[in-house]
Image 1 (cartoon, rainbow, N blue to C red):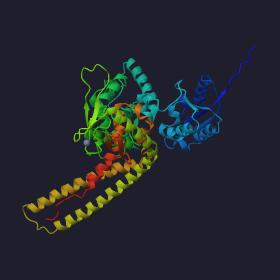
Image 2 (tube, protein in one colour):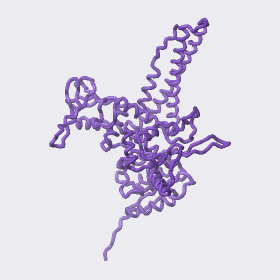
Image 3 (cartoon, helix red, strand yellow):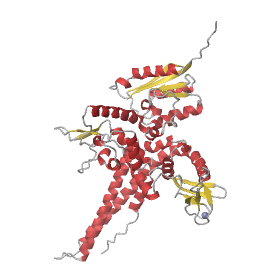
Image 4 (tube, helix red, strand yellow):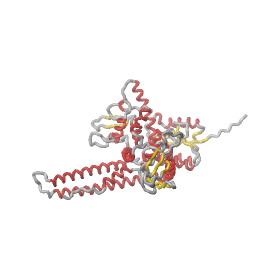
Amino acid sequence: MKTMIVIVKTAVGYCRRSSSKQKGNHSIEFQKEQIILMANRMGYVIEGWCIDDAVSAFKTSAGERKGLKELYDLVLNDKASAVFFYDETRIDRSIVTFVNEIYKPLKLVKPNVKFYSTTSNQEWDPFQIDVELKLINASYESVTKSQRTIDSQKNLMNQKKRPGSRTPFGLKKIPSSDVQNENFIEDENASLIRFIYYLYIWGYSIKHITKILHNSQAPAPGGKVWHRRTVEEILKRPLYRGDNEWGSQKNIIKNPVIEPELYELVLQAKDLEKKFGQFSTAFTFRSIAYCMKCNVPLKTRNDTPSKATSPRKYQNYFCPNCNQKANLNRVHTVVNDNFFKHWAVALRSMEQAGLQKLKEMKKVIEKELDRLKVREDMLKYNESFIPSLETPSSIEKHYIQVKAKLNSHREALNNTLEQILNLLEDERSLRFTLHLSLSGSFNKLTDVEKRMIALTFIGKISINMDTMKVDIDYRLHPFIELEDKVSRLTEINNYKMDA
Ligand SMILES: [Zn+2]
């Protein structure tokens, strides 16, 4: 008789329920059932449960949640060799904190600990999530939701009902009543709206986004097909950010579909594209790479013969001044190495620096508004000395012009101030940007994504093409375009007000 030695591996299961109202697929019991099934399949026994009940993943970061803390300690003390959870939405709506505060530190001290989600038979690896999921890593939830949406839309179609209405796509209108004004809440398509914004901040063109939506048969507004214009309009629509587009009434949605920072990054992506051209290029560092000797921006050249017999590519960066050139791969390798080392250290400080910068910008703008007030008062004072004549004098015309200038300046300042305040007020500020941290593996990114990261986080790269030594100026915070705008707005303006 053979003796069978069964080695039972122990694991810990993690469940989270965001509110006591959650039933069905998200109830703790359901999550447990699925986790046990999955663990058994993988040869594990769940020895203990860590449960966060009625905890919003949005408000509490992963490292601060009781259940996750227990989990961390269990694994740290070798009580479990694997972690099972139901799906990504159960860990954290923004998986970044989970990855940064639990996954990465545990993997560092316990490299053999394994993570499993019941949604996949593969070991869970946040760096291996496939491209589209990775792009919306903030809300894996969105994907499941979209799928559900697609299913329900298909059902509607089958019943010959037309999905959608005149209310903006992704929103449901709650008509005004005696007690409150007209209001909007998210419907099941809101996740698609977010998906579009995410793709855009990663540098994907409107054309490309339209293609993705079309190919994945995502439901389009009004049950039609996706057009570039539809996507463009979705990226612009103020209602998604909580602003009414018809009047001055602001913040009419309590929880807007698009958080201020996400919109900020959309504006930033637009500006970056305007400044540096489209993102899809193999030359990731074009226009930020400089010749170290001549201090001029390197140009790029594709020297691959059109009828190349070998698949080898001859893509080069070259200096228009000294004509020295360097192969694309060599340049990218040295920059990537440097970038990667810098990355791990920089991220944490970047979050702090970003907040700090926002506060600074707020002060600068407020100061400028004060100065503007002084100018306006002076203008009024001077104006009182103008003798009133029947026909407006050239002096009066001049005053009118200056006033108009000051007014539009104040308006621009106020708008920017509001933009900054929105970012500061948002509890999740900077989370989105830090999502870029998930791309710990720069090389796995697409060309578009690489370029977006490079333009966002690097100011200038100086390359010595003899030694391949690089000097990189990293940006200290992610709000580059906003910073530019603030400094443009607060440069000493020469208003000729002495008449
Ligand atoms: Zn040169």
